[in-house]
Length: 219
Image 1 (spheres, one colour):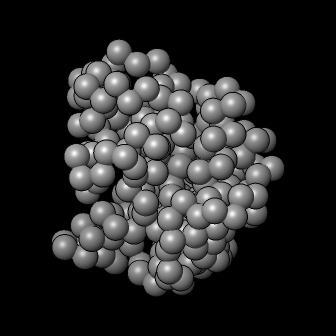
Image 2: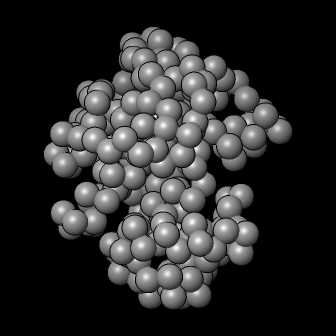
């Protein structure tokens, strides 16, 4: 594991779940779920398709609310946040890399990356370094996302996440469209982030990620 940190994140209390459940009429996705993830930990979520890995990521990121139980992230309970507090949590505490890259196809690469607080014009050198690290040409900034391949789109989503530098990385099958070389760069990014005190929670079936992680949560 590399010792160089992607970013330095002070300890914020980790992630904790107690008696967590998620259900809807006619189906329970999971129940009595309990785990803790310490600061500086790379954790993977594993389980069969339909086991609720993406749902758990969404609960961690405040996009969904568990049916019951308690879930805390950095000392905050996402399900209890409202208004400005919820916006601050989503803006500064968590960052998503969705399975479908989470990009707007008709927008340029630049516009998709600047959905968050990072602005390329403020730190173009850093943006160039991150683009180079993930083997994506910086000249793609003005390119509409729909013109990129699936693997390129996935890397744009991860580049956006790397430039945001949140406390908690939430990633859904981030290497599904990537070859070994580019998957290795994603693993390196995650481990560097965690070496700086952040947390990564990654839903995956990929043994390359599972083997590199420090904690495996089975659903």
